[in-house]
View 1 (cartoon, rainbow, N blue to C red):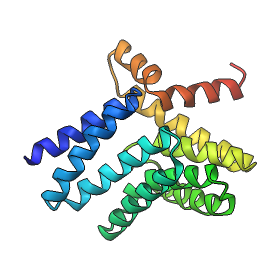
View 2: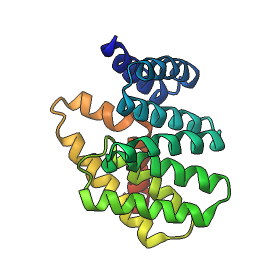
View 3: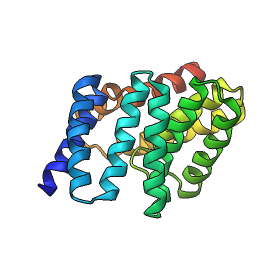
Length: 193
């Protein structure tokens, strides 16, 4: 039973990242119930984060905000600050969409502070977190900080890509994961390559 909760989490993430949001929601809802029944607060926090991303991708910003804040609360209760960067990036993105610009700016600064201090070591998808921070900062006209976030996202993405020895798999990682592809497009667009 313990392993099933983790498998559903991975399956939900894959479905979400390939755009199958309804099926992703289904798997993640099933999994969070198992995690809750097992009393696994850490896994529940991960599920809430994954569900918050599903809401964000569906542009259900109030729901994304609620889920990310619930996840954030659990991670902080467990004293897992490095796990909060994704939630903070989601909160800032949702707040921006809900026209809460000052709040979004405060939250994006928190996320960047944690990401910069750990140099991207610790969070699960630091390049995605930096990318989301970049988008929020760019929209708010904070161009210097936005450029910093994009540079960091690109650096971490390329470091991770270098770890993949198989050329075709590396290419798939860079092109098939939407946020990785977006990071590369933004960098290539801004450097005029």
